Structure formats: C-alpha cells, structure tokens
Image (cartoon, rainbow over all chains, first blue to last red):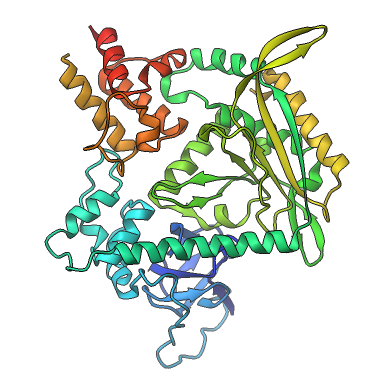
Length: 390
Length: 81
C-alpha cells in the first residue's frame, strides 16, 4: 500500500485545497495521469500521480485544505489486497491556505465539469460563493475571467465587499513567497556574475526567421534566450540540478523554470521539460503553452515541482539587469534584462550594437565563480552564432 | 471597414488576451502595454487574432505602429483601406 501525498508545488507552498478528484476507488492509474485538481495560491493545478497502481481509498474530500506531505489517497499494487475498511476517512484539517478560500465553496464547484478559469477569477469565485461551472466566459477563448465572475455574482453579492479578503489573499501569497525567498537567502550562499552580450546578430537572425513564418508560428526572442540557456548548461552541468541532503544532485535533463507574471499579481515559475532537446520553435510552443495555462489554470504538478534551474526575464519591464534569488532546492538562476543599443568597441572603432545584460545567481556550495563565468561565456558564444540555435 | 469596426475588432482581440483590463478607462493615446499589462507574448496573440479576424498579416517590423489604440486604428485603417 502506498500513500499518495499532497505534493509540494514549489518551495513557497505550505498547503493546497483539493478541488476535485479525477480518480475513484478501484480505478487503475498510471504514472503521469492527472488524478486531482488542487487550488493553490497560484491557481488551480492539475496533479499528476507518480506511480502506477490501483486506487484503494481517497482520504480527503474536495474542499479540504491539506498541508504539503499529508496523505490524500491510498494506492495498492496489482494483486495487493484492499486495505481494511475504516470508519469514515478522517479529513485532514490543515491550516487554511488563505482565509478567503472558503472550503465548502470550492467544494461546490468541485463536482461540476472542469472549466477554464483564470486563477484570479477562481479565487474571487470562492470569495463570492460563485460556482465557476455556471459562469459564462465572455472572452472568445472560453476562459472565465475575473469580470465574468463578478458579473455572475452581482445579484447574490453580499453587502460586505470582498476587498478585505482579497487583501488577505495577496498578503498570504506575499508571505509564502517571502518565506521561500528568506529560506533561499538564509541557506544558499549566492554569488552573482554579469555579462553584457551583443545580441545584434541573434535579433536579425530571428527577424529573418520570423519573416518566413506564419503569424501564429513566430518566435519570441525570449524563446531564443531560453534555448541558448539550455544549450549552455550542457557545458556547466553543475548549475543544473538540486541541492538536497547536503550535496549537489546534478540533473540529467534541463527542466527550465520560466518566471511568469500572473494577471492581478503573483508569480509562477513552471518548467519547460527537456529543454535541451528542443529547438527554438519547440521551445516557443512550450513557452506559449505554459504561459497560457499559467494564466488560465491548468498547470501540471510536475511542471511546478521539477524545474532544475530558473530563468527570469525582466527586460520587458525596462529593467537592465536582474540579480535573482535562487529558488530552492535549485542551485542557479539566470536573469535577462532589456535589449538596449549600447556603444560597443569593435576593434579600434566604436559602433552601436543591440546588447543585453545576462546575469547568473548561483549557489557557491554547488559551483564556483570560474564555472559560472564559463556558463555566461558559453551563453554569449551561442548568441553570437544564432544559426546554431535554430 | 470603418474605424469603429476596426476599433471594435481591436478591443475584442485585446479583451480575449487580457480580460481583466480596464477597458472603460482605456486611453487612445497611451501605450496599450502599460494600460493593459500585456507582454510580448500577449501582444503576439493579439497580432494572431487580428490576422484571423481581419486577414491582416502584420510584419514584426511594424509592431511598434500598434503601440497605442489610436495608432493601431490608423495603421489598420491604412492597411485595410
């Protein structure tokens, strides 16, 4: 008999609220199947199961908030006897994820068909007691938005507005991120490196590529940067992995965490799996898919828990460089700033080139500055030969 | 296609991508990116929707002409005119 536990979907998660089960006792499940939906401070997440088995018993009812690591279901192997029946399975009453998340309201939505709902809208629906399954999406993509939920709540809306609850939720999310980042700063001896990289060739190469592509298949420069990062890591593998049990565990594949800002505040860093095997167009497709699901609900648990390194790109906000805080238990974070024209020495003359500040924050327990510098120079070399990044 | 029709198509595309924006308070002469908190991925999706809806293929080099609502309407009116 195996216990299936509430997974940790990142170092800043303490608990999750079960929204719905997609499996029932007696059902056979396979590793990777999506077996439940869990509401977190970062939206609804599809939970994948990590081993094959037969569902013996569900230990938790939808609507229950469960701390990370608590058993939520029992699985048995093929041919294994069922567990002795017990009195009604005790629902684990964990600390409330956020006061705003009224459990029974989430539960009411749980049995309805799965609808696409933005994380902000799902939270608001829980606050207002709106069943998201009954809310019509106004947008063409069928995703229920915050405005849809508020419209649906109009007649039944209680006299006390949800502003206080919204503030509580935002505070809870900040506290969770704060706790994870404090742990990072307390435990990880960060070192920081930066390099200014000439991306003129990379940009013009991409422009040529995109000129020959249909609108829907155009590649963003961010995808090229992610591709270059995944390739450069092959040369300095000690930046790619996790620090666990007092030692570095290098990861065989690059699961590239990408910082994605959520509408209405908040941040998630889900992973593009096996990024080292994907070309620029494949990275772009994976990135588009991740951003869309991050904002509509529907990220998978593996994407939130197995990133081996994270990339943050704050260039669009006009920032020239970013010195990141490593997301534990990862051992490095790569930052990209805004693409800017800079005066550049080319031999004996000064020319204007499009440039970018790339930075590395890395864990000194796992790597040394010399190796970190090699990573940044590999990144620069790859971006100077963009044809190789196709 | 009238400017009103173009404006409606633009707003519809933006709404689909950034449904939580403040469309009532949207100013025509200020950057859409700032007002609606859209990034380059959102913007690419708006361009894709405009292509599907209006049949306009907007080259990357001309994205900057869509920076504000007013300039985008001017640009699309010229392209469709």
